[in-house]
Amino acid sequence: MTGRSGTLAWVAHLVLLIGIAITGFPIYVCFVASTLTTADIMQAPMPLLPGGHLVENYGRALTEGTASTTGVPVARFLLNSLIMALVIAAGKIAISLLSAYAIVFFRFPGRMICFWAIFLTLMLPIEVRIVPTFQVVADLGLIDSYLGLTLPLIASATATLLFRQFFLTLPDELVEAARLDGAGPWHFLKDVVMPLSATNLAALFVILFVFGWNQYLWPLLITNTASMTTIVIGIKAMIGGGDAPTPWSLVMATAMLAMLPPVAVVVLMQRWFVKGLVDSEK
Amino acid sequence: MATVTLTQLRKCYGATTAIHGVDCAIADGEFIVIVGPSGCGKSTLLRMIAGLEAVTSGEIRIGDRIVNNIEPKDRDIAMVFQNYALYPHMTVFANMAYGLRLRGFESEDIRSRVDQAAQILQLGGLLERKPGQLSGGQRQRVAMGRAIVREPQVFLFDEPLSNLDARLRVAMRVEIKQLQRRLGTTSIYVTHDQVEAMTLADRLVVLEGGIVQQIGAPIDLYERPATQFVAGFIGSPAMNFLPATGVEGGAVELAGGLRIPLGRAVPAGAALTLGIRPEHVAAGPEAGAAIPLAVELVELLGADSIVHGRLPAGAPLQLRLPGIAALATGTKLPIALPIGALHLFEHASGRRV
Image 1: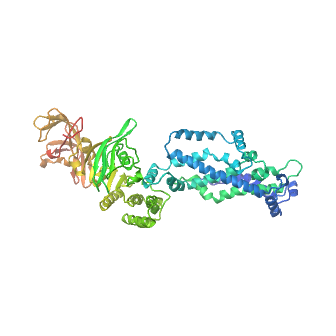
Image 2 (image 1 turned 45 degrees about the vertical axis):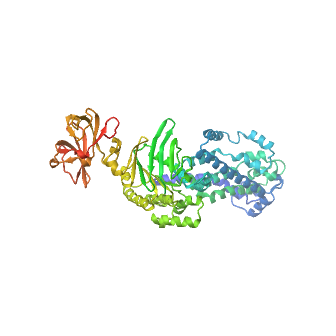
Image 3 (image 1 turned 90 degrees about the vertical axis):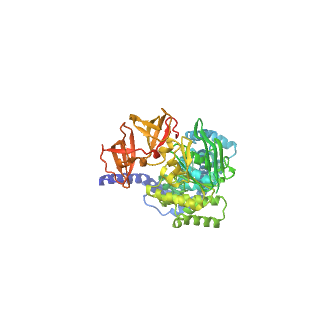
């Protein structure tokens, strides 16, 4: 970041501003629309200044829902999404932390086979294995349950690899010092490895929470009743085809609400998140 | 405090043998330094004693116990690592207390032990800091503190000073020696630095290629090295070695027909190596010196000077002269090789004759 000429700085800023405008404008329109009535939105051109129906729209969306969601309020969708995102993030972290720990610090027969098996699953995203996975989940009777919603998404090769790479940077002497201090595998994990991975854990939590929150295809398949649906599916469900006109102001309010939790997680954990991505604190 | 006894200790990695049957009896409270060049197996030996490497065959006893199959934490030892291996996320206090905590000590007991160690090591004001906020020397002290709070029977040091700068290394060397005297704990110290080895050790173990070359007090090793390797490793600058052949009448003949009297019989015609330390070469006509040394280079160190030269037949020789020796390149300096300072080794085996 040194020795940059004035012109170049201006160009860089201009590019950044354009980027922000491209990303930010649709969100602004969405926000404006959520404060208008549906009739206002249908005007051409749509007003670009916020209207006076903010409280009313958000209140109705949260508590009443719409006809096409059979009256299930958006608050319920938010709760479902929150549960799903939290369980997926926590589950992925727990599973990948433990499997990476085993692969790095234990010498057992088939260690490398396990590693490669995990590594290979990277090549099989959810979409590829979705039909067999659906069959298994359906046979287990987990359709329309939180377990069915989260369990198949928990295994994570990416997070395992990330932890593995981090664990490999811990010096062997640290492991040996802990052995001499009398720390068994559990204490070493709890007292040394976890505190040292705190920033990685935070960064991963943010990424995985957003990943879980934004799931679309899997919840679409696995939930049939509106009360088990997530917010992302909920928005889609509100945009009714059929007879009922789409209540756009409520849809926009719901879209804004759907955006808030991931933003909140990122903002709240930003300090840790950036630290985890940037430095590798020894 | 305890004795440590190694009996026919061997370590193999597949087909390669790293340690070839080491025998060593270490007395209670003794400071033993294992010294040797890189890759000689000295760290492996230490790690076997610590329990971090499995023993291929042989026996390790600490006190009366055979510890071959005992976990490191149950061997009643403490180790100081080369890079200190402090837990970066714990404070100095927590670093020192961790081992005690895991062993279920009362927190008051832990507090008093850590405070005592901190006092001995002058870490008093630093207990709440993290290792990242400490200097190299302070981290070194914390690593030692972590070892001494446990009050183990044996201290193991794995090149603990090699990450410090030269000045600090000398200071810490003195501190380690004083600390060990004060605590009286049996200590095994691994280093590749022969000065560290000479100054710290009660007894030295010189290791090369996984074979013990000699065990003894530093001065004994200096004065009567058992092999050519030990002779060359101990002492700085290193001993001069000159190829020689035994002749009748108690002398050896160097290249170019130069005869050096030994004052004792040697087998005639035997291929030998004559060794003499640079500080023992006599120079100047008053010393009865008769061999002309062609001076090539003089290194002035202030207190003394190292003269690099060549004997008439071309063999290089170094000698140390006191003070500042103003000798021009090409000067013929008369030298003598005093009988009492000569070491003789078999050429093939390197063994002392």
